[in-house]
Image (tube, rainbow, N blue to C red; front, side):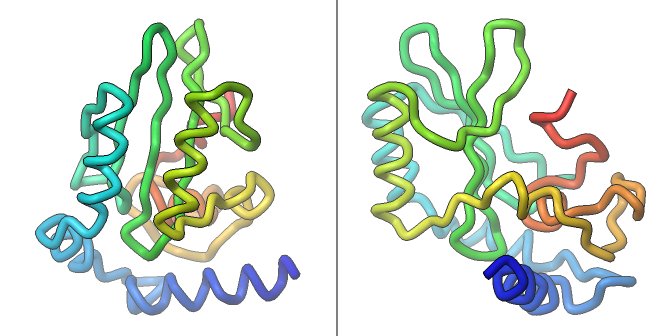
Length: 159
């Protein structure tokens, strides 16, 4: 199952980046212009305070900080298709990959992502290496997270 999943994700990478050695990032500009997830973001905005934090220089996902009372999460919606990651922001400012909802707010987030057809990739998949040459991540550290969400050398939930 993981092999089929990995093959499907690598196919997506080729579809969007065109090359592993010389990736083409023009899809980012096109996706930002088309705003494909606006209806989902409006629904989230009805339930939570929301702030977009997408960095067009590093992200290949639409990134949002959402808040409710004292709780915060980061949602990243991939520009390579209906893939998402959600991070719970901890009291010390760290991030935990949200695997299972632990409260009503997180259940609402998971429900909305499911309603719109998003697949939340598992930590096991996100950490799998990919031979994709990016600008900020060392080649030996590049994994599916960087390819689908953000070109950052350190995974946000790993300290």
